[in-house]
Image 1 (cartoon, helix red, strand yellow):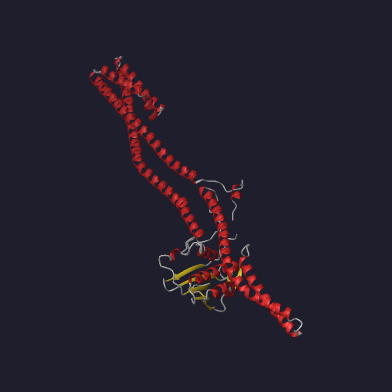
Image 2 (cartoon, rainbow, N blue to C red; image 1 turned 90 degrees about the horizontal axis):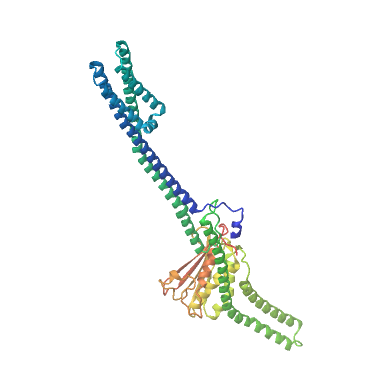
Length: 488
């Protein structure tokens, strides 16, 4: 069993808690939302700047167009030059008031070019009003037309460019929410799958562990991941609990064995009485008639004493073997021999209770893998249960045979007693459940027996109908099946 202390050494697996992973997952989702939100704010600010630029450009273009209209009136009729200058001043004011926005959109170089064209146009317009030289006027007029057309063309180009940019940004802004929803959905799916895999999957695994422990498999739970998290602490707690349960079950098994030994001792004492009486009578006769007996008769009486002593020794040895404490050794065994040795231990109880025992062994059974002491405890408990419930002349049948299931041998112990009521049958293997009086039972016999057989890789089935007796079938794996035994 793994030692929790070893898992807390500096060489332990890296720790990545579920809380940390959840924080990272939700932080990523929050970061995604924050990035999309900041991007949207910046994009909207840029669109607003561009819209403001377009409005400024429209106003600027309108003033330039009005100035050029009055310029044409002056060139054709010699009037409205002052009106042209007024509109030019308004255009200059528009450029100056919106300098920051315009520079942000088109850049300082293009802004300087626009200012230069406007300034040159204004200067030329002032010059043409202050000269009467037709040649100079003609040159200025050509320059005015050139600068005026460039100012209009520049404004139109910037407007066209910015309108296309605004349309693209608006189209992108329209698509971004859908992209965001898709990314958010993928993130949610990831988080849900993470929770299902990391939490629900692990909880399901621990539910299987609890079922395994409930069936008597006390092997430690191995690490499942390369790193530690909250479930690692739970696993360590489970392993500690398994160790405690295993130890307590061993104590419970031993205490129940002692109770069985107490029951057996009463029968053994009665069984020992016969060979001891025979030994005493033979020894007394031998002492009394020693001088009258010939050598052959003396030798025969000595043999009788030895035989009765060996009989007594065998009875005591069987009881000691059953009651001996210590680590259970798992070896290959002959099932018929184990059953027969168990019957010998309770033979006197069967005899005193005037119970009829019927044995039916199948020969050439495959060897099983188990512990002599543990199996004897199970079979003795089942036999004594039948002895306690049967009246005089009741019948106990003990059979061994090959199971229909592959690689299992069966010991069936049945009786013709009153049977087990249907509503009680599902509970007979529960710890401390008993229908006997407090003086006769603790409710641990069948529970302990089931735990022992489960440890040996087998199982017990109980069948009964009230009034028609009861049958307990013990299924034990042959040596072809590796047994999942948890060592003490």
